[in-house]
Image (tube, rainbow, N blue to C red):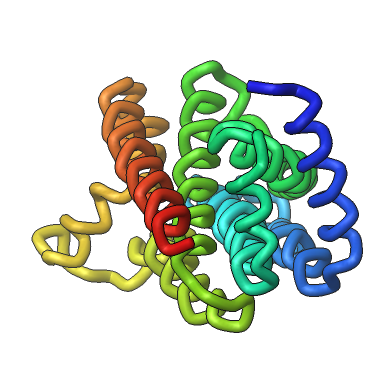
Length: 231
């Protein structure tokens, strides 16, 4: 990795981020939800499912959304070609762009958790889980951003990502039977795996989430290879 190239990409993307009103609005969504849930709960502790719902909304609406938009914008403006043809490697490009997303995600997540209660995440196991979850949504955003041809089309992909992976804890409130196929499938998804980790103390769910991260990383890499070949 070349730190000078990574720094240059980071500075460029930070300037672009500050100019993009849509991206600036996305971090506000989880914070507002956290405020609403904290007020609805009163003095009672917020259920773990609701806490992870905020986490899921943060990663899907901030991490995935930012990466999708930034990569799609590069695609649409044809500036991604310049990055690919430049001396910067795939890793330089991804790390440089991820730094902006990571910084915004971290600030949003900390603010949201301070509002609804950060106690469930004050352990190494939980922190590792959050980091893996961040990588999953990051790679997913990168892959989709490379796959789409315009910024406008990212919204068609963002909603499924939010509902399938960000809002997964909501399925617990649909009162479906434990033997329901939807429940069994959803239980394998990253966020519900981390909820299981909290409830059982097992490290196995982290392994399952790591597999999701690997799958998302492979998806992002193949999308990048496809873009380079298309050009």
